[in-house]
Every structure is written in C-alpha cells, then in structure tokens.
Length: 214
Image (cartoon, rainbow, N blue to C red):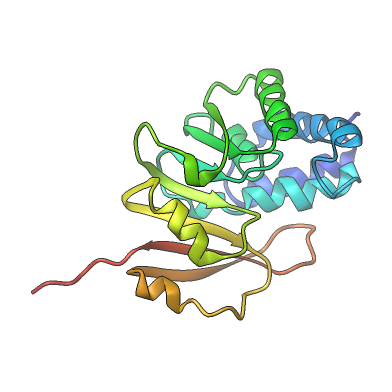
C-alpha cells in the first residue's frame, strides 16, 4: 500500500523531534505495510488500521530511542518486532536481538528482516527466560510485559553490570515496586510524548544499584 502524505508527515515529525534520520522513513513505512498485510491473515497485532500503526507502533517504538544507552539491545517478547525492528531500522549500527516464542510471529520477523535487509538483527525463537546470551547486552527492553519485577528477573541475566532494563508503559502504575528495591535495583520513570498518540506513555528504567563506599 502506498504511504499517504499524512503518513509521511506524521513519521517525519517524530523522526525530526528525536533527532533520528528522516532517510529511514521509507523503510519504516515498508515495515508498516508488511505488518499490515501479514496481520490480515496471522493476527499479529490488534491494530488493524495502517494509518493508526504510525503513532501506535512506529512512533511509540521510536520514542524510546533518545533514552537508550549505546550498545547491543535485546527486545524480550518482541511480538511483531516492537519496538526492536523500528529501532534497528533507524539505528543500523546497533546490534538488535529479538526474542519471541510465537512461531507465526517469528516467521514474520524473519520475513521482515529479509525484505528490509536488516543485517543488524538476530532473532531468537523462545522465551526470555531461556535465552543464553553470547555476550551481555547493554540494554534489555520490553513493550508488552506488565510485571516490572518479573521483567527485571529476566533482563538482569542478559545485561552487563552497567546495563539497563527498560519497560515501556502506559499510565504510571500503582503497583508497588518495593520488590525492585529489595533486589538491589534502582529505577526511575521517564515520561514520553508521542506525536499523534493521545495516550499516556512512560518508561520504567531499571539498573543495578551501585553501593557507595567511602
């Protein structure tokens, strides 16, 4: 499907806002189009309208980029590649690993990487709990998991000592985060603004607490 002028305008506005290359827009639209086609048969996403996929999938995924540390990224439970594939498209030098247990979604991820020529992406079929990393990641991210403590338990095995675990959230939760503090985790929230998206978004950024000695 051809990208509309509104598609391009919304996407360019977000890319420019976050200092990301506008040259990535055609590849992002191509990913959106592929997702929309596969979604008709394989039910990869609850979002059916390709126009709505721009803010809800592409821009929502890319809003995290300014807050990512440098280095290799692992996207746990990536589903149809969100947020990992949009990040890999706009940052082709960043190694991105996608972890997903659902077979039909893994097939889509492989086709998307082949179609878009993404040689910086590795796909691991399976659960995050079962991943044995070849080397520690700088950052682990998730968009769908809701339990921060459970996500940290998975992510902490995969990141290096200074690595971060970033959970993408909607409204700030009322769930207690004392379990993170008990596990020696420091955390902070970062509010996000996503162009074209009238919904609350924020990040929960977690890392190992550093003991102060003196």
